[in-house]
Image 1 (cartoon, rainbow, N blue to C red):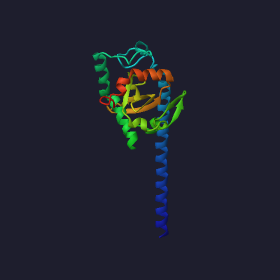
Image 2 (image 1 turned 120 degrees about the vertical axis):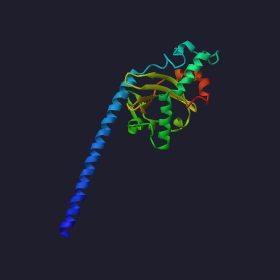
Image 3 (image 1 turned 120 degrees about the horizontal axis):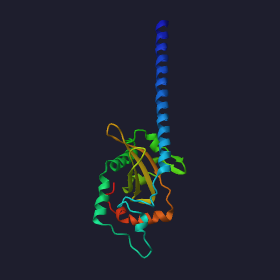
Image 4 (image 1 turned 45 degrees about the vertical axis):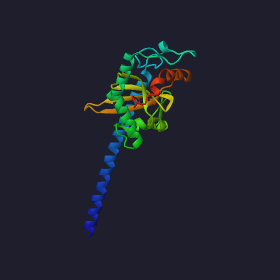
Length: 214
């Protein structure tokens, strides 16, 4: 009887050691992946394009459509509008909406390393992480201000939420080797209030457009 008890205790001990080892390996890999992503985000933050110089509308400078107090919001050509609306069918942009929905419903679908995208952290003076901002932003549809490839792979997407257009956010979406997409970063762009107000004015037509926004 004692031999059986010793054998059971030995098996339990071995199982505990195996469980601890597996947990340690998984945690180490997760932390390593998180650190790699954080380093890439820091580089992306340093290399980010100045939104004041370029927007997605015809890839023109914001200054070229600057608005004075006497002027109304600018008009856009049919070609500009057609080109712009096509952006909402871009798989990277569609995936961003999918990942935001995943965050809202708690599944974190669309994020391979959720903690790296969700956790609030400050890097180089920029606020990163979905959890750093109220969820009411993500419940709103968003307007795309800018979309471009990045040297780190994937695309960066600058967005403004229709119901709360008081901040501009940048998302980094990456295409994996198997063809799936992955939201790898999300942070707020530091835009001065005056310039933010000008951008909101320029994009007012699209901020009010519920048909195309995601």
